[in-house]
Length: 88
Image 1 (cartoon, rainbow, N blue to C red):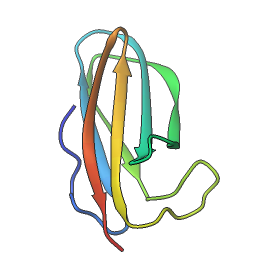
Image 2 (image 1 turned 45 degrees about the vertical axis):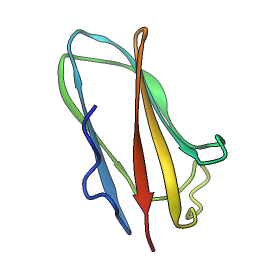
Image 3 (image 1 turned 45 degrees about the horizontal axis):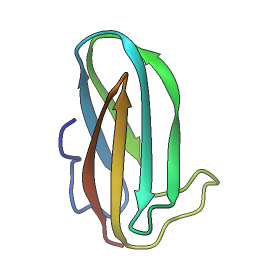
């Protein structure tokens, strides 16, 4: 996983990650209390570079407040996380 760009962001950020072998990948955003805010379906993905754009909205389409968030990617039996900073 690469650091999101831009970071900090105010309307949209792009999260990029590399897959070394085909596998199921789950991407999820959490607030600092550990609550799940946004979740992308666990999908089977091919080898290569993948990108997800996050528009600072939760699973219900509501805008989230400014603050620090955590993005976690689970790829097979590996997990990685990065910090995101959202400033309105």
